[in-house]
Image (tube, rainbow, N blue to C red; front, side):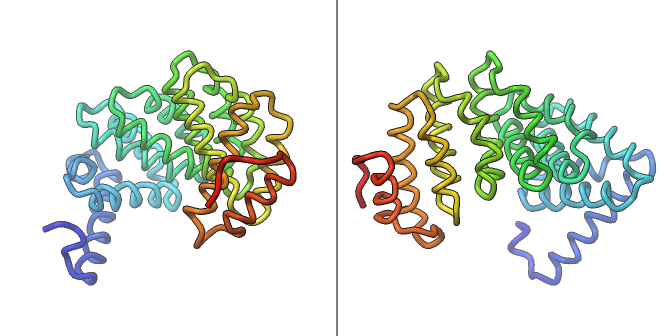
Length: 258
């Protein structure tokens, strides 16, 4: 039976059971139960397991060494689901202790499976939102990596911090404006749209874009900003028309209309 097919009371008990079994595993030498949760077919079982791992790390100092050793072992496991869960757990830990899991995220960034690499993007977003200093320093290390997919993943991985503090990531984004790969530039345009619709963010983002040299990309980014204001109209501070009017006041006419 799938996790969300179970009545809520039983779900809560299952989450407690998962956490207790992981604690018992990591307090001793066995790892079978934890690995089984990390490899479960049900996304929510895996999520309960990696959230439990993160909480145990933050709450019980005596388990930290064992947890990190367990995650390192998981990062080498043949199962991509186990490796994926390990990266998610690392993200939970990185919210408070990024330095402890930085090497795990670096390993996951180059994983052969897209699901694991996506987990690193999620972990980087999560840590960047709550613990931006070390997370953004990590991002900068790979901003100009020769592998275009690494550059794209890093660009995507700093998005969440930008939604509340666009000024923190705009200098990094600016370095990608002339990236030779269209896929990287398209991700950059997407991220610019995503960090411009909350209160005060449109002004910050467009203020930075005025100094960018790649005018073609800026034009596409401005159109994306207006489009995001339309798509996210229930969450955006401005309407799409108000965003367009503001942009045209500072940049001239755009082609984006809603």
